[in-house]
Structure formats: structure tokens, C-alpha cells
Length: 436
Image (cartoon, rainbow, N blue to C red; front, side, top):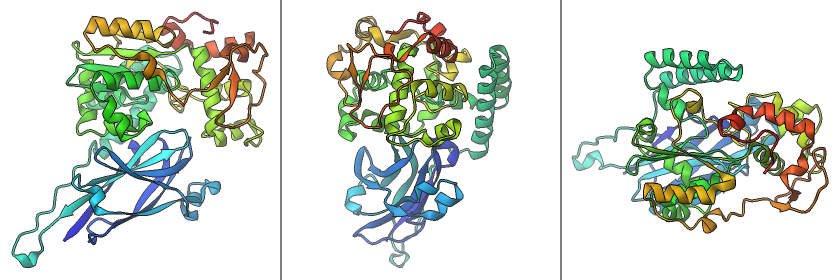
């Protein structure tokens, strides 16, 4: 007899989803040897969910589109335009075994991947055979629900204090909360953008979305011997990054990134350039449309998008410590609280030179940086165009060509971006007003 256990992750682990549910299979359900019916629904928060990946071991078995009408969740969660949020498929057991686990992961329009839960296959002997059936004990990674809920409240409170400039107060609040909840450090470290850490290699990487993240993550996995595995798992490196976070005890071991012997590297990008890249990204992938429409008080669609100036105004209305990671401050919460001071800060603009120097100093493998930097994700630039385009609406299309970052700025916009990302400019020693 073959049965399943279905473990749906708690919602505090899925900050990028409005809601989700795995309807099929049900825990304890008996399945035949031909196939496993998998169905449910999922709705993205800041970025629309477009598909669900089924992952067994390190292999993506299939990607299932959200093409089933599920109007009730869309109505309840007030996303009427997302009635097609359901998925359904059949998976052959031979595709899952011998891993005996099938992870379900939501794929969002901004190309991020979020785990929803895991289906665990159990082979059991029938009672008629005289054997005692002993169910496998469920292991739910990171499942300490009440503690984690408290931690999330504490983390958000600390972020609010930092947003008001009360650094000393935020640090004091963290220390007080940590005295009562020692595991709070794990929650702080696991704040987006989540760092990568290898206990075996004593190597940690802090990175930021739209800050050379694809290049940096590839370089990191190459150094710990997992780049080939990562690209076999999926051509989009961040899918494997999400899988890497799911390792048993990863979140608990992450605090060892604070050990003095761990070599911590932070890759950063000129904030003036990065926010232009964030703007193009949000135009292309429309994951922030609902919020921006509400802010602007008008419709946003494929033709009628919004300007860079309007995007900056929108960013001024939200918290950049809790925003979508593509717009978030580059400084990690653990840095602001004084828990982490990266031993190496690599500026993307000089990354080839600086990473090569790190490889030599730490005795790391010499990487092919030219190959690692290649990505179809990059936006084409018009280097010779001097036209100011800070008030221009760019059409929503994936192959859009845009001017260089400097073309998006006038003096007013430089000042506004300086205020928005002043923490990053100061911490990582970027010149005010200088656009790379």
C-alpha cells in the first residue's frame, strides 16, 4: 500500500504569496502505482503567480501552468482578475521515487520561486501481512509556528524603527527580543535577500536583487562546487538557490555565518544604476501594478505604464526595508543591527578585479568571470542616446531596449534617489550623484 503525507508550509514562510492550498492529494490518501493527482491554487502578492513547479530531489519534474478557474480564492483575497489561479496534473510515481518527496513551488512572474509544501510518499506493508504499520514521523523544517509569528512581528517593528532613523533603538529592541527568543537571530538572517552560506566551505554571500545577483550567485555556487548541479536543476540559477535554502537545518545553521572564521562577501551595485534597473524590471514583469495603480490613481497596462519619476514617487510612499526585494535597500537587516560586517564588499562595477583578488587571497578556485556574467536576463542598453527619459512611459515588453541609467536623471531625481537609498550610498562608499 502507498499513502501520502502532505505538509503545507505555514504562511509566514511565504511572504511573497497572498495565499495557496494543496487540495490533492490528502494526507493518508491511498494512491495507485500509476499516478499521483496533484491539484490546488496559489495567488502571488507583489508578483503574479504563473505556474507551479513539481520538484523531486534536485530535478524539476514538470512546470504546471495556472490555467484552472478558481474564483472563490480570488474573490476572498480580493484579486478578481486572478480567477485562473488553479493547477492540476498527474505525476507518475517513478518520477518521484526514490526521493519519496515531491516539493510544490510557486513560480512568480518576476521569476522568483516560492515553496508551498511537500508531498511525502510512504510505502507501508498491509496489516494482513502481519506487519505493524509504523507511519513516518513528519519533519516540518522550521515549523515552530507561534515563535516564528512572534519573530516576524519583532522583525517588522525593528525595521520600522530603522526606517525612522532610530538605529540605537532598533539595536536595543533586537537585543531585548533576542534575550527572550534566542532564535530571533535566525529570522533576522533569513530576511530577504537571504544570504547563501556553506558550513563546509565557511563561505557566505550577501547579495541583492538587481545588484548583479545572478552573476554573484553563479560565482558562489561555482566556488562551493555546485554550479553544474545548480544549472542541471534549472537553467535559471535562482530556482536552485530557492532549493538550496530548503536543505535540512539550513536556517538553523545559517547563524554560523556570524562566526569569525566565516568569510563573508557582499556584492553591491551603484544605487543610482540599480533603481533604474528595478524600474525596467517592474515595467517588464508588472508584479507591482496593483499597488502602483492605487498610488497613481489610474490604470496601468501594457501600453500605458508609468515613468521613472512616478516610480520614484511610489518608492517614496513605501518602506524600502520591507518592499519587494527588487526595490529593497541593499543593506541587509543583519548589517544594520551590527550582527554582520562583511569582510569583503565587492562593487559590481569593479567586480571582475575585486572577485579575482578575493579568489587569490582566500585560495579559492579561479573562475571564468566572463562566462558567469552572461545572462539573457540583462536589458539591452542604448549607450549613445543622450535623450532625457525620466518622464517617458516605456512599453511593457521583454525585449525592450532602454537608454543608459544617466538618461533617466535630472538634478531633482538625483536628490530624491539619494534620500531613498542614502543608507546604501553611505555604507558602501558610493559618491553622491555619481551614476556609473
